[in-house]
Image (cartoon, rainbow, N blue to C red; front, top):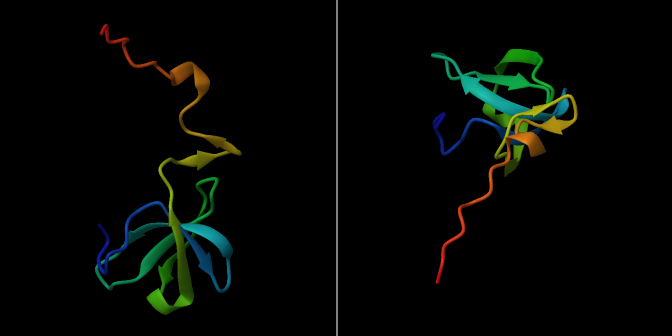
Length: 80
């Protein structure tokens, strides 16, 4: 939780950088904004500089989810 109900890895629309993700907040209350690929854009974004879109449930790198098919493990089968 980053304060004001904001959560890390939230997809946002920033006025200058466009579609980005929220990564953190510093002691001054300014937000860190990253690209979807993980490159830091700024550490000085103000709350009224962006609009919340949705919560991301994964880290997005190079156009792929951080969980790949090889990492997927099926749930064990439960016998009735």
